[in-house]
Length: 353
Ligand SMILES: [Zn+2]
Image 1 (cartoon, rainbow, N blue to C red):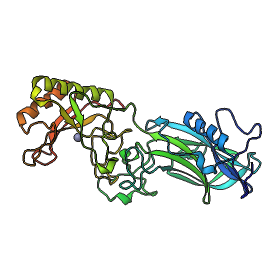
Image 2 (cartoon, rainbow, N blue to C red; image 1 turned 180 degrees about the horizontal axis):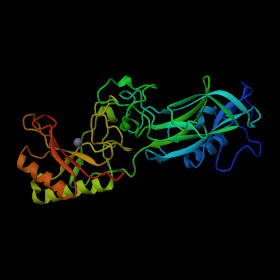
Image 3 (cartoon, rainbow, N blue to C red; image 1 turned 120 degrees about the vertical axis):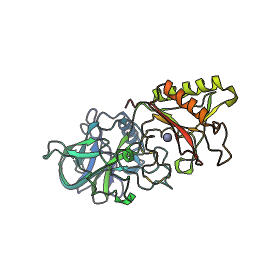
Image 4 (cartoon, rainbow, N blue to C red; image 1 turned 45 degrees about the horizontal axis):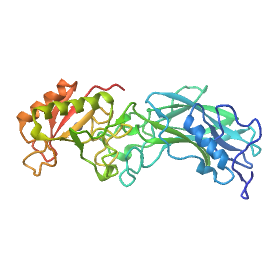
């Protein structure tokens, strides 16, 4: 199984693959290499099995790739095992490992052109090592065979509500803005020098958030270049909110059949998290992180055209629809950007995450 450049793609001697803890990547012939053993991660195991089958054909780095599964809620802890093996595939001791998480580019509707530095969610620490605090990265780790690593989701990020975006770096520890760390698929690396073993961690996100399809009562509007130019990425909601807005539009249209349909703008991105409408990785849509809110087109007559299926620019009608949202369980219902070009009605339901 050894390739010409000395990189061993996989090791398959009996006993090297533990039950429910599969080897992820390859090994170098000496010095020892680092690796990961996933545990309890179905997608990783499936991917690993594919890698095992294809190992003789693929470079080791082909054995992982962007994955949205599993979806892990913020605050969840899970374990992986950082491993060190000799060229024969047996456990050995090695030092100087760096272990850290990275978010993939272009996840959760964040196009690369506008989102060049997604923030990974998870903090990590070595199990059984004092003090038991989580870090953004671990350096100079000594691994004796395998070292359990505890990953805590949704603990990483930094506060960007006021400062420049590049304040968000490895040394920022004082505060974080959780919205930036949600929805980005991420992986964990175990590296010595530039040689790394990587393991997909799926995505840290809110569940359940579902795709909200168009209904006879409403259409989708509001796609932007910043989020894939598609209304498929900005219309995701929790069930309570989704039924709430559907029922509210039914109620309104039943009294105002001349409205025909309504136009629903941004809800949330597929896994929630920061819905940065300007594409700057900075908070903007403050209340569109959980899949509980929707903006309904109600443009101002000062800025024609109103747009397809906009509510008329009539405060009395707006008030009626605000009441419809409230009567269908909304906890926030308000007109926003009044008189401006993007005047709209924001209805928001309770968060069950
Ligand atoms: Zn809104």
